[in-house]
Image (tube, rainbow, N blue to C red; front, side, top):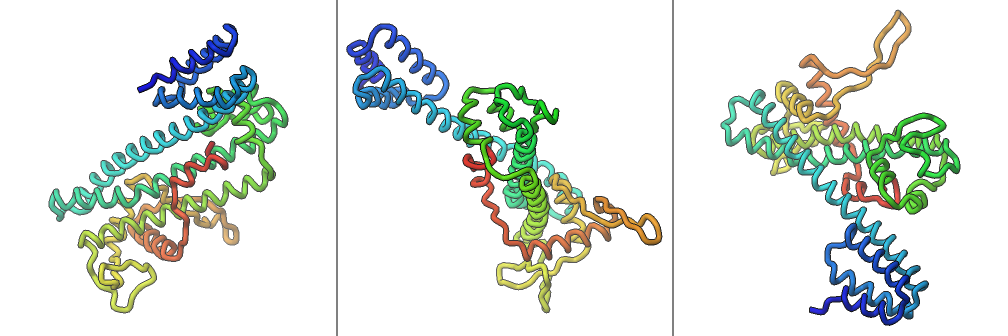
Length: 333
């Protein structure tokens, strides 16, 4: 196999001055250390790039700078893919451990094998909703950063130092922090922070994302119930049907007894989903105050689960979480 690194350096010696050669070699080594996995293929493309640049130092350096920018972008995508896979694996194992412990409490009548099978089914089915909530939290943080950064005006990103100088609000998004601490500031500024709209529009988007986050809880509850049906734990047919739209393999509506709804709530809570809901607390004879509470009593738990099942039966939500996560032209990069 031809060694294209040697071939490139030989070609540089034939066409460039010593200082120009040293400059190009330094850039090539920098790229090699940071971004490249298949070195020979990389140097083959650089070799061709030098030929396409008419062996001109200035033209080649300009084209090489464009190539570096592309490599940085591709490297960022690879790193985000790895981060996604790592986060997915971590959250699945965390969910499996939590739900297995709860199932041992709630379904003592099942054998150990049945408990493990049910736990795995629930952890697997609810993972996409946990990941979607992870993405939503990240996007909310990024939008919050945008609102803060809009107050800075034309101040360069290099001078923000992870703290908005005008609002004194700390940058919240881990993505932004990671990228700001690395190299391509100008590129990120163009791709990530120059945008239209205003603060009110961004605040509306944050509000909508919080609603979507609540939807994920409803869908997670439905997934838990579906696992109970598929594992033969929920089998009672509802002759007249119901508004939950939970079906068995034969397309028959399944009943959800109150005792089972309570167990579903406990599982979803154990998985770490936010089950708080808004209520109106009476302060005086005619005044009410909005606040949030988490169901504590069994009556509240079963009502919460059944209400969420009804809502999830009507939801039509895009749950393509990976597409959302890799939206480099939008909010994630």
